[in-house]
Length: 402
Ligand SMILES: Cc1ncc(COP(=O)(O)O)c(C=O)c1O
Image (cartoon, rainbow, N blue to C red; front, side, top):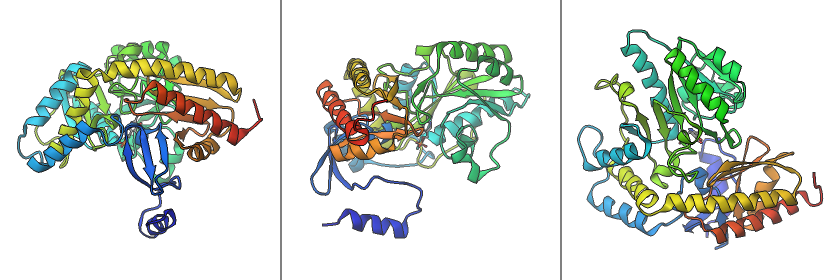
């Protein structure tokens, strides 16, 4: 049997060392549970960072993938196939943005958003190149996406990034008004900041963004890669806070584990695109589209979105009760099945203590425990997870209450 030590040793020799991984080797999964090489089971409340929306080894998804593999996986974007249009139609109905470009990762979806914001202004004959983004934002690791990502830890080794990006604090409405000008191509915002610590954008800031875009003509890009596609129990979070984006980046849960992401466009922005402007070899291949169609069928026709809303409300109540027992939990933030528990101390020890309890959670922004469970999780599994998290908090911090 391959041991954890063997796996780590091979990786240390041959993989670029950019990931600090937990010391577990997973072999298989079912529903909301993962199993390691020793057969030990873990309740998965992170779902591969918000990706495994249908859980693991979902029977319909697995058989659709197998069926597609026996028909046709990939033809490139040199030719037509029937699934891109079908998927784009479904996404358009859900988001109210009529056109889609398919790619493979959230960063690429953001990259296309930034490029086509500039493309729009180029087509108007008044090139605008600047962007306004938010402190605590995370939009991905490619050069463009990194340029609108806030944390200097990610940025510093790769400078210079693209110029003309201004960051505004999410509560600094005056700062936002001053930053958005007639040189701004677009404002980019995560309606709920994910990596930055699960921070919903406030209603007043959302109003200020809308007004600033209206006053200056700047486009609005919503990055719904993490908080979109039913994660909050609503199709997207932008309309919940009153934002009407011209472009939207989505990814993560869309393929339920098969890599696919997309940028969605309003008609006026899409009208600026010309053949050859952008592309992706893999983008929207048959396998990825087939998986995404299964996900959307489950989400919309199968009632998964209302399930998320229901289980999400139960989760919120359970987390507030947990916070009542542990004064070092300072705040609970989020919606649906996207939650952050802000601690008054570093959250890293909790991740390890939770693994010991058979629970997978994740730390973000140093002091935040993040939960992004599969959409299919049940209230019973949430209760079990909160019980395990309670035990992990006690194991990590014991009697150090507050
Ligand atoms: C809001 C947001 N945008 C973009 C990305 C980048 O996505 P990917 O890692 O698929 O490139 C992420 C990833 O965490 C994200 O949370």
